[in-house]
Length: 396
Image 1: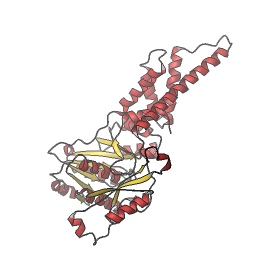
Image 2 (image 1 turned 135 degrees about the vertical axis):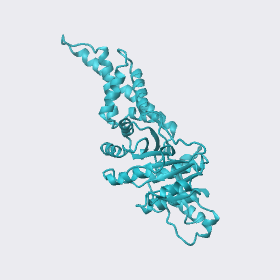
Image 3 (image 1 turned 180 degrees about the vertical axis):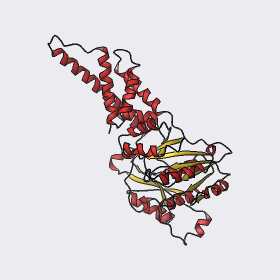
Image 4 (image 1 turned 180 degrees about the horizontal axis):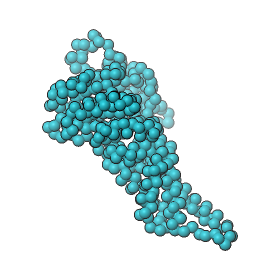
């Protein structure tokens, strides 16, 4: 596999450079905008830098002119909106600023309330009690969580549990810290692959159509091969979408790993035997409708064809899906137990309350999140602290 970088004023020009040098089989692995540095940066324009890869194995060269392969990365044919991943430091500062804004809002509200009370000359007017202060602070925090699409039931549960631990007249920073810690505990630690030396692990990816299962698998496979240096194989039962098979085939060729298509349930026995010397087998499944019982049964049979101690299951969901639909989806897959949660498309929304909602509704542990289309960059273990700060910081 040959991987090279190209720079140009626009994305299309950079892609054409890759085509000119690497040929039509080149695949764009990542796209980013590079801003100029130094004292002359005001007079220079940013450039687009892409990483492109091509399979340069002898077998590939011998068949290069026989079977033309359409580019699997949509950015080679149709320009995609660029997703700029925020720098961790600037995002951290932004979240801290949001928390400070909440504190300022609460203090301003308390001051205004005190001034209004001072103007009231009625004999029945009373000063805010110590319990009232805690309640007002918690009410603002509750509203902030709901604005970020946290279900009211879970927001109430969190606020109620925190309220019971507070002393009278607790300062606002202490209340915020208590809510912050409570949400982190509710989210729990993120869990990745449990890979044991000398044992093949079959990892199934299930979920509805359109959530990005195939792209997520490509990202994780790239990390396991390039960074973890593990022996990886791919399998797919998603024979309903030719484009999905072609996409996975392209990445398998780039990474130099085998891919097996599963047509019948009995094929899984052959896959298990064929890949018994591999560390991990990533299995892509068809995106079936959660309303179709027969289709759900097919997925369950496929998963159960591998012994429980040899498999892991990941339910892939888009954070942009309506909460009501997410409840129906997770209920449909409830009979497939012991799955972990992968959330995709975090870059496409400013409200991520669904992550907390589904975590609390299912009890399933969080694992990975994706926040862009670049392979293999835009994926990481779900960060409970970052999610909590965003939930408390208000929507964008």
